Length: 254
Figure 1 (cartoon, rainbow, N blue to C red):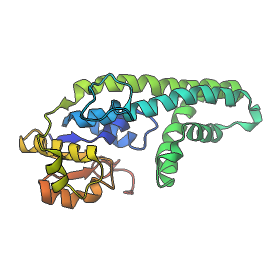
Figure 2 (tube, rainbow, N blue to C red):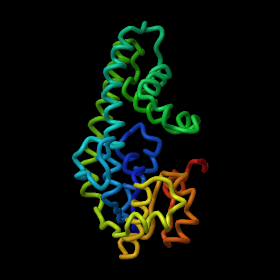
Figure 3 (cartoon, rainbow, N blue to C red):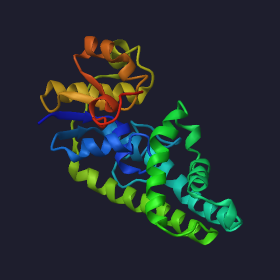
Figure 4 (cartoon, rainbow, N blue to C red):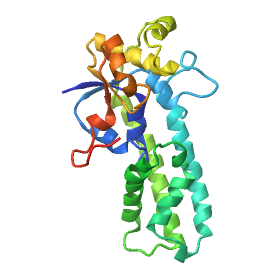
């Protein structure tokens, strides 16, 4: 059994059906591996706002802010907007691919996922599969489209709330590093972002206490891109969720 510290990306991935890292995150959480995280990750996951900071926030699993809140609120808004838009569509304008297009557009996924081919290769198939199963043999009329899209949004919302609650028991909220900001900046000057530095130091602290062996991240630039430097400075192995938990039946990719 492996012992992993999880960065924020895997938590978001397992929470939302339409997330880029959904499949890999599900495979990670379905294992019997020991999974740990820290206050900084939970802050970024569901507590961060433009008005608070990691140092000042009261961090808890129940807060609807951070990356959780951003994706959650977009789905709620999308459900209303999709209903209005699909009500005005003629039946002959609609098919399965049109519904997938509308969901991608209204939830503004294209603003946050790069390169765009990842939407085509990873996110669209998950959305398409759900809608296909929901619609079944029915003709895609305006009414059927609205009902299917409502079911998709309702499922994402319900699953997100249930998964966030389950994370509390599946993950160990581990101890936090006592390094000062000055020490973090001195050692990890090459890592962008205050919270990223804190997360890496927390993971390193837990590794030094033999709680975890590696950190798993979906951040290919700041963390995984600096994995050699991070290991040289901290001794902490950084693994990319796509490499560690990819579907073995699919070809490797970015």
